[in-house]
Length: 375
Ligand code: MG
Image (tube, rainbow, N blue to C red; front, side):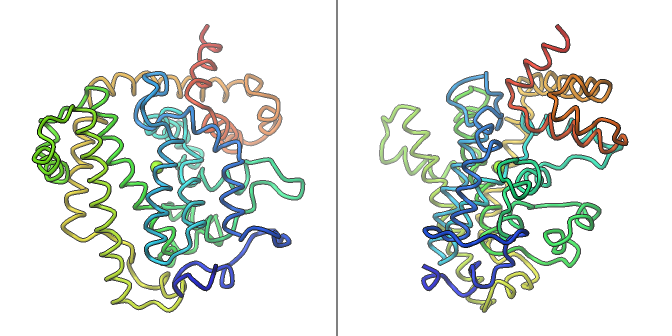
């Protein structure tokens, strides 16, 4: 299998490996094992009850963190295979990228970050890494999932300089201003492509967005005109699906073609050359990037900041804050393993245990925990 990969792909032969050495598997490559460990993790199963944009109880058809992660992975794998890159690694990074996400989407993450301001803050990328490095308790010989360096490097998309210093190996690139491997770069962009497009679908479904507004967006308008010209009588649900699948297709095709051009220009001979390239080599063309960003800004202004969403945001922010304060006051309100971990610890360490507990909650767990506290 390795023979079919491009020389600049992540290869097992040049990997920086696992933190704890393990014997090879008889049937699977190392990145396949990583992907499988992620799928079997507790944090992965929780994603089904975590908010993407709409809180889980707002409707059964909206994306959750789980279906979002699957869509990211589908897009990432397509791009990886087209470019001769490592598909199982790309899939592993995509499936794991949101493992550390709090309940209630960005509102939950921002609030937990505020609560943690005096205790080192909370970043969901860093928390995803913490889940696979420390928090998953599955193996007798080590904590975490003991993933390959390249998988961990991809999961840690962003990181503050202060945290990078403390992280060691995977933090180095943020201090040395290096790039991650191409599979990590793909996962990063696949995430943005997935949410930009599925949020249009969920936004329309919710009624918070309408077709007229979206027709002001070039990425949407081009496909709208195309589909409408060919199928003038198509009902809205099919029309929307035809437009969105064409939007994803156009962005993904552009991404593959532009990245191919950049790879030809830079001609990296190995993953080390990719890391030292000075800028990401996986990229959309400038023209497509502008349309993609324009749609992203539109979604911020009209969907994520919609008054109806903000109302929900205020509610869940208060909930997360209440939970944090209560567990800081009385650790015994948490399950015994968390209470035990925080017993007698200094404030920052206690706060980290509380943050781990809250970040691991699903939306509905957080809601019922909050009800239990407030009666
Ligand atoms: Mg994501």
